[in-house]
Length: 501
Image 1: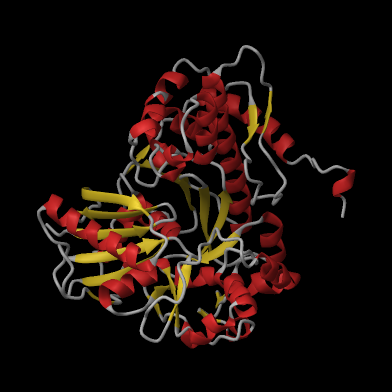
Image 2: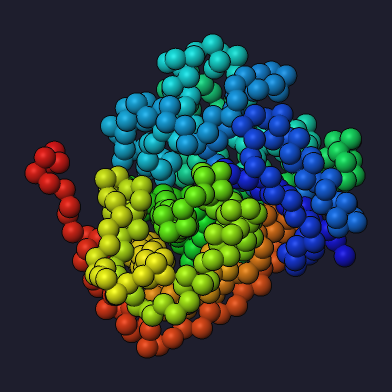
């Protein structure tokens, strides 16, 4: 039996897992994501060694995936010139606003809008405030690329990661010299692009638990790796990645009209195999909304115990119960939800941090209508779940309309699949039938399965097991009415006279 390692460099946690050829987890280690490259590399190395010890075997191949946008400049010797520049870092907002003056042209080239989280905005900020850093930069390395470089000595990236730099031409499949020139850079400072199953290098000697020469691939951006492993590969499929945030993804034959893409707040990314475009609409407060409500309902938990940091049921680790106070809180969740009648009668707009898609509005906030004295704590939690599911239905409808497809299935993966009520509501609200991937960590398992085809075909990557989520016809009919109320509220203009212009 082959043993395949997956490494997922996430915003909150680094996950390392050993899997068999079907994606079944043999061993897994999860650690907080360090802010500095040496510590991040040490974390990955320790994870590989620990998994090898627990599984009693070494990997035959290693796949690396992770967050996009976050990265760092390296000098000619491959040493970091700064700590990681995180996608959450607000530096670059002013530069992004300047880029946004030509938003339609930018979207036509890149499939994205200008925001502070993009590397191009960070490079422009560095050019303006710390030009010496860019003058010394020989390479830019995204977080997954930097880890792969440390394990192999070779710096490469995948197209799905390159596409998130805001300097990659989606149509030409190459870095855009004109966009890079805005920051005084050339394409030579960015990692060459490798295919998802193309070995970028081989493990260097001295890695505990890994045989020198083991092939390593950069599987791609975490969302795209999760979708591919879940079987979301062709038009007619749709994926729903659940976590602190939520992403709905639809394969399409071509990018959208830039005006439509910008109006809807969606992005266009390459699919893992490069044959299609993945249209993506996001919700920043999915599991995060549950976090917030539980913080209110079960007081006394500090920020360090927040399940949004990866310890709750919606974490990418898939752990149903974390440790310490956070675990105690989530242990209470089934009791809080027990006996809740669905629909709750509450219509929730689930926007703690504004709305990105499918009707961008950074000022939009959480609203609850229909709440009365008969509702309890469990009803509030269930209403939050309903709100996220209703929003997903709206997003999926817009994405499929742009793609010109009809979703034949909605494949759901991520931590929230472990909350039975969430899946019951998801299945009842969804128009296409819902299929659930119950792998512990679909993204980490996906990276491992991609690595298993190193040097072969991306089409031969196995699909993780899925199971149909039962749909209650009566509940589905009831939610059709709730959806109409939700859509009417969500599309109502809430700006006042002072907001005009």
